[in-house]
Image (cartoon, rainbow, N blue to C red):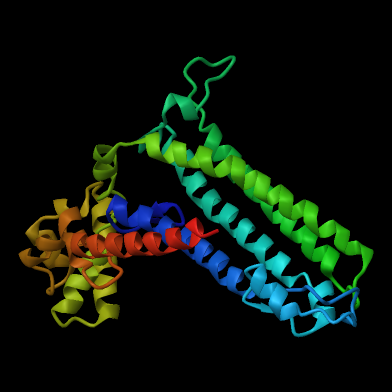
Length: 314
């Protein structure tokens, strides 16, 4: 795992991928929540003042499948906040996909070598025969900017419009339609890319303990043994400095070297100086320990089942 793109702490690949799943699930939840707010029919609002023709907005709303009819005829004809909310959710989907896209692009480089993309979802170069470019990820990343641009354009149109209807509102459709078209293009391609790429877990495992990613585990180990965290943090930092000076990893420090750094360090610290030990120790809810990640996977599966029931009905 990385922060600031620097080695941070070891974690399971599944834990990392699930961190992308939760925001996307929330995006679908936002659409579900929006669907409930949008279930009000504007029928009977007229131009702005309502109808004098004896219409029954409630009956028509029920016939058309709405939960209710609007309470205010001006609101029913002049408000576009629901359109803006829908546009925001589509833009957020693009943003969430762009984050995973950026990682796919990085992981596909020789320097990372974490994945191999299927030929169907990558392209070569007309000049450089060795190239295997992550086109789908790059296009998804680029489309995110377009989705955000559509949202900003819509909000700019809505800004400072007086009640009630204004011709400006003709401009509310094009950005939303463009967003829908963009995601209709991106989502199937992105799904195919993710379903066919190959993860090189051996390479990930090789890099997991590097960059002193186990330093925090030394501090946590000391805290569990009663050492104040500030002191434990300083001791862990001293271990890193000593290892750096000798061009070695933390687990290569001898018992004598550890003892010279601090009296609190003995051979018991070696129990956490491994990727497996580090990952297994993160066993609180939300952590990367295998048992917690398995529970998390079940929770995601349950969320997916619930949300699919919503989408099938739409």
